[in-house]
Image (cartoon, rainbow, N blue to C red):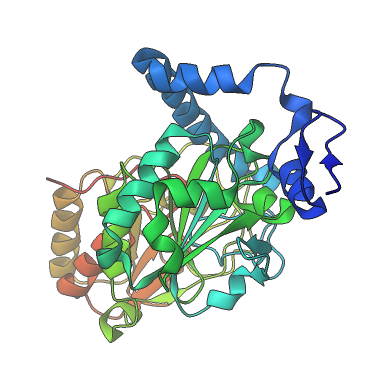
Amino acid sequence: MTEHKCEKCGKTFDSEKALEQHQEDYDHSKEKEDDKGLKERIMTSNYTGLAIIGILLVGLTVGGYYALSPSNTSAGDGYSHSHTAEIGSQAPDSSFTTVNGEEFKLSKYSGEKRMIWLYATWCPSCYKGAQVLQARNEQLKDMKIIALKTKGNAGYSGPSTQQFADKYAPETLNKENWVWGKASQELTNIYNPQNTPDIIWLVKPNGEIYAKTAAPAARINQITRFAQKNFNNTEEISLGKEVEIMGRNHISTGEQVNNYNSNPPTSGPHYQRPAETGFYSKKLPDERLVHNIEHGQIWISYNNITSETRKQLEQLAQNYPKAVIVTKRPENNAKIAVASWGRLMELNSYDKQKVVKYIKAYINKSPEPFAKLPN
């Protein structure tokens, strides 16, 4: 039998295919540290493990902000042109390879709710995440779970995709709603540019990115709610319309933007500081309020309303002190406009029930989800 030897580490394999798989799964250039010792320390030391996970989560948070920063986001990016993933925009298409060696594109699953999970096979939170997702799969069966090993395995060698799935979630290998594979370099650049070991994107059936999160075991309830949500009901569709994302770069205070793509705007260039939430009887700069909706808040603007409607809007702002800002805006086409990141609803009269539904449906559907609903 002919032996096939890896020139970098000296290991031998009984087939050329096995050697190629080994070379793809293991990044020898980063093996200056003893990887086996590293994994043993992670698994045997609770304190070290927690510290590493904490560092990774911090890195994920910082990386998430950087990945969606103006320098990495092209204004007006659509489905086929975007180079980074961003909440509220269309999920960019890219390719991956399944554990069976088939090459697919993410667009193969258009029209389905999707969870795109990029993981590393050495990552402790990924072990637990795979186990919890398998245990909860009956509740997740209406969502396609695309589990992809991030290119480069987040900096360390580890088991292959097949070995990881076999060990931590073997029952999912034959489930129709699961796809196991390896992300291409392009897909990793789009969805995991910081090469973190555990990141999740939730995508609606229409292709809009609904949320970004991490650590499936810790976020399983959020993931389950998404999987069971009916995005095709007419009630949700009636809550306004989607607006193309224009980017989110900062501009100097006082600078004006004359080319927003909706009235009022729902994304685009904005001042570095948002306005305080609450009710305003005057107009505030659009460029400041776009920052509010980037933070996940709902901006309600009004024009030519009755004194009774004004009182109702004042009360609404009081009811949602950390989620809603209400301002006068004479440029509105409708008497009341309700704006969130990449979405706009216009009303010719105040409809409390519809406005409250909008607030609850679209709060924090934004790149920086800082708004809070009352307890």
